[in-house]
Length: 255
Length: 290
Ligand SMILES: Nc1ncnc2c1ncn2[C@@H]1O[C@H](COP(=O)(O)OP(=O)(O)OP(=O)(O)O)[C@@H](O)[C@H]1O
Ligand SMILES: [Mg+2]
Image (cartoon, rainbow over all chains, first blue to last red; front, side):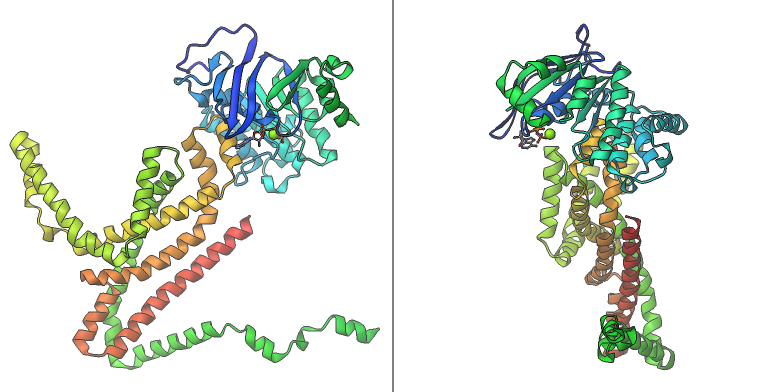
């Protein structure tokens, strides 16, 4: 984020700082006074009931939604600052959507190279080389020339992950990446995410996959009605949550 | 057993002949027959032959005018269409103003207005500018430019140019709505995915949204090209020597009303039918690719 007009704020190890953020849609309060700090290489698992504001929180972090008040600082860059070039911040923050949002008019390779060429200004060869490496990594190099319409849901989601990784992001956001998938495809996507976590990627994962939370998350955040009800390590939250609501929600999902 | 299976699967031969007759595209055959008839007349009757060769120059101008105005309308339409989906208040409102004004005025009135109101007005403005320039800024190259502006006469602006500008202005608004609808048909997630990869709004439009929108937009654009070809007959009121105007002239020249307008109508029909076949072909290829 060298080219940004804004002088980075020194933030120690906190790569994401969410500071008293409020966001409403009309009368719906999606986020109410949410504060959260995420360290470099931390995997933060966010869960909670439908409508609790999980998607809104993620979308605020790459400024697909603008908060009504409060501050969000990503890698030292305050998003709401008028001089911030939001495109530069977004290139550093990958997001994977529940419904993939692949570009249907481009091949898998085209999906993974487009932003590399247009945003990172890489040459076609360079972009394709990295794209093939990433497709290898998510396990579908043979689909490079297929169109998204010809892929299964699990394959689509892995392409979407590769597309984000191609930008060499510092942070990856996942918004229910496995919720639209059949059971047998969930694992192939979760495996890719586990690898990423092991390699030290900073990740914010919204999901109901408690297995993933147990295996990979450094911290779990329970979000309901736009508020952070409770946060803690997965051990703490699974063993003895402080709030009854958290307990009830986890029980309901596990059994 | 044999009998029941026969009843379940009737062979194609068993379709009654009346039903088969109903499936024949009679309308196309009738058009074909009329076409053959007119071609026959053109080759055998001197009146038709004379009309045909007099009118054929008009066909060329009709095609030229349609192509140029439609090409311009596409450019205008794309820009204004982007304005109609833009969040920029000024861009959005200017685009909407243009579209709503054009939609509310008949094309014929618009053409006359461009030719006889706006063109003289533009010329007056030019003359006024040239005097202003000569008075305030009388240096070398400016003087030359100002003098040539002052010498520009209303008759120097050919009617065909005014006609093309008028047609392009009207159809620019129609195409803008086609583009707007095409862009709005693309799911919101596409723009979000592109933006979240760091692309600017215009990069996302250029590389993600528009290439997808073009598929939905092509058939209506094709239909509008057929429409502009037909509407180009309206510029005959400006005495532009396109097909319809030459029809009027041929009638006046020969007093052969029947033969003249038969040939004119036939020539338009040839043009529009071949275009609509082309549009259908493109439409089919588009759906196959998806
Ligand atoms: N663009 C929008 N317009 C209006 N209301 C919205 C919009 N986006 C979110 N909301 C509302 O904000 C609240 C929080 O939504 P959000 O999508 O963040 O919840 P969520 O926790 O992601 O839920 P889910 O598990 O169903 O995805 C909901 O009540 C939702 O209806
Ligand atoms: Mg959600």
